[in-house]
Amino acid sequence: MIKLTKSFPLVLTLALSVAAAQTLELYNDKPDWNNNYTKVGDLGAKSGAGFKGVTFADPSTYQAAVRTSLSTSKAPAMFTWWSGYRMKDLVESGTLQDLTPIWQKYQKAGEYGSDLAKAFTFDGKIYALPNNVAYWAVFYNKKAYKDAGITPPTTWAQLESNNAKLKARGVTAFGQSVEDRWPAFIWFEEFLTRQDPDLYERLMVGKAKYTDPGVTKVFTTWKGWMDKGYFTPASTGFGSGGTNGMAKLFAQGKLANILAGDWYTATIAGTGMKPGDDYGVFILPTMNAKARPVIIYEASPLIVSKNAANKAQALKVADFWMSAKAQTLWSNLQSFTPVNNEVTVDNPVTKELTSALSKSKPRLINRIWEATPTEIIEPGVDELSKFMLDPSTQTQVQANLQKLADAYWSKQK
Image (cartoon, rainbow, N blue to C red):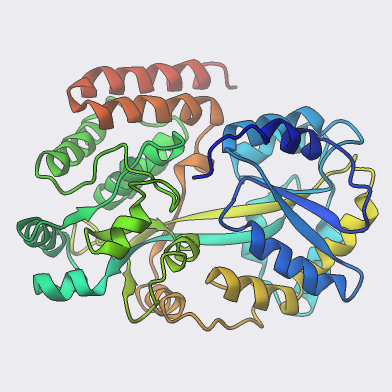
């Protein structure tokens, strides 16, 4: 990930200022995506809807900067965010622009279905555009698999057998990370949804406890994988910039699998690996071979500030962003699963994932970062990090997670 530098205060100052230039600035916390935002913006400039990406050094600072400015005319005209509970408080603050008319235009044209808009709908109004809808799948190194004599697993038993065979060859099966805090939730939600997706759904809304036996089993499975050496050290960087970044280890063949949102394809591409030739993708199996497949997804919103000085220009950009022209370029640059019905992509791994989703018709489960209240998961990732760094803290971590949940749900009507 990009580290803080001496120039960071200048970036922060720019982020909170009103864009004076004609080119609108799209604020984000996604350094690996920033150049591609600008490329789409350059295409939009041909029709008066130009913009450029302006990125921040880390998610926490980004969130603080956006929240501080939203109620003022210095609010970023357009910015990326998170859906679900993380978007709800911004909607309730009255600082977001209603984008329902733009959605209606493209839905009427048949370019978007109604289900996608639900992720950004509050009280009947749609407050965001689809920045992307990401599905969390497993990217696998084809050479590592060939050398180990294994194929992508279709059952949990085969998955664990693959892990053991990779370990025997000195290759780490999967990556895990506490870098930037939030990745600590990845394997918690994956183990739980593969074990009992209904329990996961209940836990997200306070109808189950982090101390329940089913959740304890998740931690036991997780610890078992760590004990067997199936994971990289928790300190491994999730991004491509770190010395021990997962993408770098993946490209070197030292790491066989990376479980991530399909947006991670862009990071892997940055290592020089060729999609389809060097790596492929599969959906993580369920622990119960007879159960319906499941997959985690995240719906990432692109928001227009209601109070921004250049809101009118932002609405022009928003309209362009939804178009098939913009989405074709964006989806292909990022190797994203398309959200506009008129878009097709060239990346063979993206096509492979799209085909897998079509064939298996998995149960879609909202990512924990958006599915449960911020007041629980924000400090909760620090608890999960403690467990990853020291599995002996399991009992205390579960108790602490439940305290966070109790504190929040006890105040709700």
